[in-house]
Length: 216
Image (cartoon, rainbow, N blue to C red):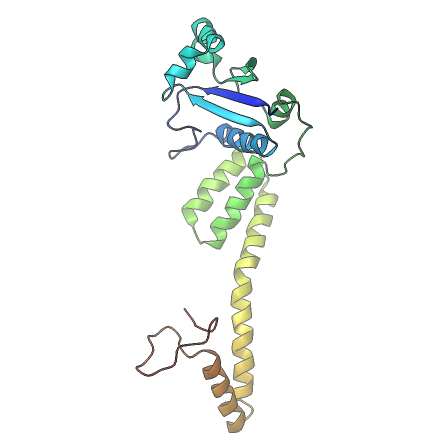
């Protein structure tokens, strides 16, 4: 019989709290942990006080906790009808213990790693506000300048790779161009056969470019 986990959340804007411009990282982590539990065969059910107050009033244990502690009792977690946690979001290891599961493989995707990924994405997309935002978050998490620079260098290397590749293609064609008129004609015909339509609508009567050979 599958383990049944019930989560009674404090008032939130949506069912998971992962919404709006400022998301609490704890809620993101907890939502991922619940997805992991679900993948392990645990039945998960969540209730939001602001949207489903009836569920809180109908559960004697939850109602009693609210009367005694108010919203400080939330979130409250029950496993197969028994209260297992109150007042905080447990870690994945703690959730696994509650559900009688083996300890999960530790994740290396920490908040600090997430900020390094975001810094790299900011570099790749040329987004200065993004970089400033994630640089500030990474610094507050204790990420070193050396690690941030490594992320920047890696992202820039990935970003530059296509530019280097197209320059090599251009050089190959231009080298053939310098080998004589005959080679020039061959090179030009080769280019035309590969890309029959680039950055402009085809002229009337032009053949459609082969699949995978169009440009832009």
